[in-house]
Amino acid sequence: MSHEVAVVTGGSSGIGRRILEELVEVGYRTVCFDRAERELTQAGDGDIGEAFFLVDVTDAGGVRDAWAQMVSEVGPPGVLVNCAGWERASWFIDTDEEFWRELVEINFLGVVRMTQLFLRSAIDAGVRGRVINIASEAARVGSAREAVYSGCKAGVIGFGKSVAREVARYGIRVNTVCPGPVETKLYFDQPEEVRSKMVGAIPLRRVGVPADIAGAVAFLVSEKADFITGQTLSVSGGLTMA
Image 1 (cartoon, one colour):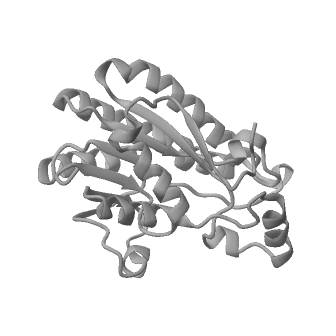
Image 2 (cartoon, rainbow, N blue to C red):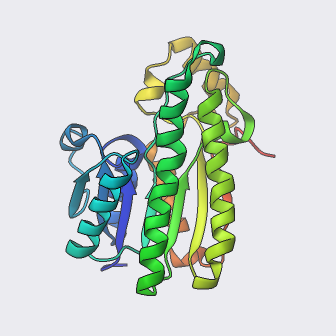
């Protein structure tokens, strides 16, 4: 791992930031793709690795250019973590096409774009790569005021399983992690009553922290998970058990 490159999208803050730090701790050379450079510089003292590319996953041309520059300057990656995501809780009947399209572009097509670039790079380089997609428990059980977001994340799960079947012959593994409620800005923006209900619905009686998700990612990209592919792992304190 000490010389292997890992790319994390949405790594400037929150869950993505902690995943970057975790991968650095276990020996990866990490690269961050994010559209929010300002948050990265204010996100704490943890080491986020050796390269940052200011790029939006909805910008197909920008992503391709950043990827080519990264491969040239840092090297072909062996790990991709698709963590970039966005949501604004809204009743579905009050939303519009523009809102839906933004959700789909960031939460689903951003994953598709990054994954295709990674797979082409890994196959060309003969790398037995690992892809981890960060979805959501909302994809598995639904979530009020997150209808289109939940649909996007469900799409990420199905996409990951399908790609895992296609690329297994190259020794490339693809898995999905589904966080439950996690202490991020989106969580703390909720009213206290809503946050209390979230905790009450979780058997372990707490919401997650970014380190919970980062630990799952670190396991799935490691050799200890070498026989695991096409799977969906809930990291939610028991919120969903079926």
